[in-house]
Image 1: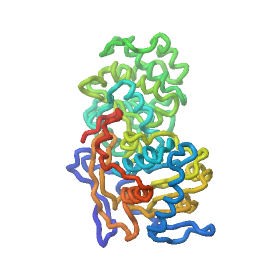
Image 2: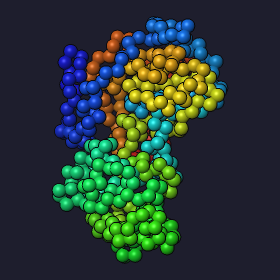
Image 3: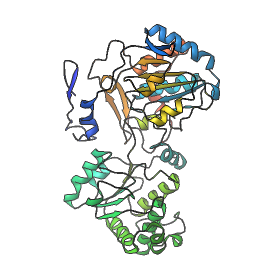
Image 4: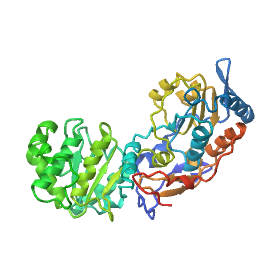
Length: 431
C-alpha cells in the first residue's frame, strides 16, 4: 500500500511474493480507491427509534445487558455471523465467545461455507486433504476449469492460466453460463444446467474406452451407465467432443483441475467425487502431487471453515443477532433475515442497511487498518500488517470481542493457532 497523510494512494503488487508473484486482481488493486461509503466513527445506541452516538462503555454495558440472559439458551439465544474478511485471530475469538461460551448453535460466517463446507466434508470423510496449490496452474500443460469464471472472478488464478496458453497449455472450460475464458479455450463446453456429474463421468468413461487411464478404475461408478453416447443426450454435448476432451486431458503430462462454487451448487459431494475420480484417472491426484484446486471465497473463507463457521445462517426464534462485519458489503438477503431478530448488534466499519437497522453499532477497523493472519486458498498462513491508522474510536475486532467477553465475565483463549489444524480441510494449513 502506498500511503500519504493516512490516505491510500494506490496498491502495488509485490513481485517477490510467493503466492501471486505481484499479480493483483481489479478488486485488490482498484476498488479500494473508489471507497465512498460513510465511515462509522463512534459507537451508537438506538434510543426512541433513532441511533444516537454513545461512548464505548455505554455501548458495551448495553450489549452485555442484553446478551447475558441469553447465555446457554441455544436456539432462543444469539445468532452470530462473522465476516470472512476478518483475521483468524478475530474469527477464533468470535467462535469461542458465541459457540463455546454463550452456547449458541447458530454461529457461522457471512459466506455460510458455500465455497468450503462441502469439499471440507469430503476431506474429513477421506481423512486427508486432497487439493494442491496455485503452482499446479502455473505448471500444467492442460487446465480444466469447471464452475468458475477466471476472468470475472479469481483473476490472479486466471492470469496464471492465460500466461500459460501461448506456451502450449491446453484449456477446457466447462460452464453453462457466460465465461470470460470460453473464447480462449481449446474446448468450451456448455452442458445443460445441473449435468456436471454426468459430463465428468462421460469424459472418464471415454478415457477408459480409449485405454488412456493412468490409474485403476476400481472405485468408479458403473461406467456403462455413463457412455459418451448416453451422456451426450443428458448434457447436450456432442459425443465426439466428449471423447476428444477426454483424450486431450488424459494425454497431458501435468493436467490440472480448478473448480469454483458453480460445481458445488447442486449435488455437490457427488459431483466433486466425480471430479476427483476423473483427476485420479488422468494422474492429477496422487499422494505426491495434486493438480486439483478449489477457488475459495473471501480472504479468510478457509480460516472461517477451520473454526467451524460454515453453516447456513438463519434467525429462527433467536432473541438477538450479533454481526462482526468489518468492511463487508451486505446483501438484501441478510437484511431480510435480520428482520426476525428482536435485538441486533453490528460491529462494522461503514454505514449499511444492516447498521441502520441495528440496535447497537460498534465502530471497527477496516481491512487496511487490521493486523493479524489469513489462511489463503492454498492453506498458506499469511501475516498482514496495518497500512492505515484507524479513526480514534474504531477498535480492532479482537479488542471488541474481548471487551464484550469481559463484560459477560468470560475469558477468551488467545491460542488461535492451536485449532487451525484440528479440522481436516481441502488443504493442510502451512504454518
